[in-house]
Amino acid sequence: MADIISKLSMYMGYSFVRYALIVGVLIALCSSLLGVTLVLKRFSFIGDGLSHVAFGAMAIAAILKFTNQMIFILPVTIFCAIILLLGSQERKIKGDAAVAMISVGSLAIGYMLMNRFSTSANVSGDVCSSLFGSTSILTLSRFDVILSCVLSVAVVLLFIFFYNKIFAVTFDEGFAKATGVKANVYNLLVAIVIAVIIVLAMNLVGSLLISALVIFPALSAMRVFKSFRSVTICSAIFSVICALLGILISVVAGTPVGSTIVIVDIAGFAVFYLTGLIGGKIK
Amino acid sequence: MSELECRNLTLGYDSKIVISNLNFKVESGNYLCIIGENGSGKSTLMKTILGLRPAISGEIIFGDGMKKNEIGYLPQQTVVQKDFPASVQEIVISGCLGKSGLSPFYSKKEKATAVKNMERMNILPLSGRCYRELSGGQQQRVLLARALCATDRMLLLDEPVAGLDPKVTVEMYNLIKELNSNGTTIIMISHDIVSALKYATHILHIGNDVFFGTKEEYLASSDSLILAGGEQNG
Image (cartoon, rainbow over all chains, first blue to last red; front, side):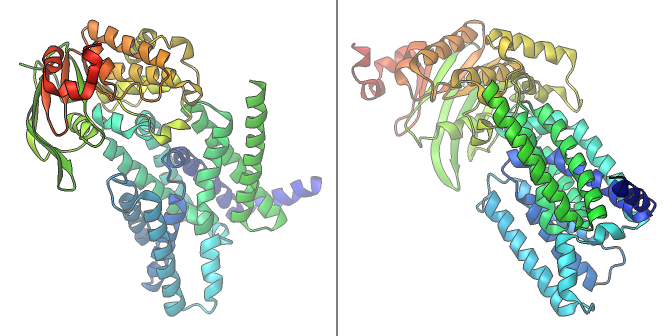
């Protein structure tokens, strides 16, 4: 035990570990906040879909040799998020099919571009690390950290400010619209925010594992808690603790960061699931 | 001036016309039942009145100082709501949102409105309970209380008794009648013609033959003979 603590304190001396912890916790917090809404709206897979869009955009940005890829990736992802989330009831291609289409399409385009035009010698390694985020969180620059902080604060403030509206629109969009709540504005807001979170989160867990950050905290909290407020608060706390534990474990044990966080999430879900079962029986 | 008037309303979707040239008026304190077969456009009409979808032609006029957002709405339950983690209080108070503008939190007045309407619907003791654990009848009361938070001037009810057992159905009808007696205008979509004739003051029957008029006129017309069968004789 003392061994682990001394090892941890040694790693804490490195700025890249501190950066990883800060950004990891912030992303976990943001994604869990909107996770509840997305899971309830049956958009669990939007994280996956949009992260593939971001992957495709990243491939294009790499080929065009943008020095700051964020500037290209963010608008493209926001655009796709808006297409997916806005007016999803009216469209011919329904939510899950649209998500699947965009997801697979941009994954294919992204990989094709990387394969054909990449200047790097190790293409499959590049693809692997952008999909699974194996190292990128440990190579964050100071600018990345500041950008993540600013965006996360914005997300949290927006969420708190529009919490009641987001609840109303999630629970019953028709009623909200009928009584004069501008539901489409809030849907747009959620779409933009989720796109921002996903672009941020790609640095942490990579494209493939972002869904886990969105889904697990919300589903775990819903096992145990009964009101929207308590579910939201619980999933935020759950997500932050899992991200923290996951990053620390991966630093000490040398495991891939993204997978470690998700495995901690799975373990957390199991605990909440059992708690829910036992709690339900006592009642 | 009527609270709500539909003039030459033509409705439909994907260029397919469901209802054409519909005319009717709802006065303050009326209890209007909209009846008709499946697919006759009842829900489309309701969504158009609520402003959720545009009409192909014609107009909906709000009068008597009534505004578009002053309609409370009791929708049919959606799949999403079946396992939605929310407390009764959270749902009821969300009815106040349409009027609260950009303010991020609920005011004291809005909280008091929510409590008052939960009391009216006899669900105050349930206020901390989880919505998905309630019975069908209790859930309808929650949604009704939410609609009353939005307004108690006019309520649109979309098949409020669907899926309820007979005893709860009668309770629900009585509750709605009571609201109506206290001055709330009721517009209700219903399959249940017998109850519609029992409680409503006006009937709008849509389908191949369109009828609009008071209950008495409807009973005297030929439409009711086909639909209600021997009901009026028996």
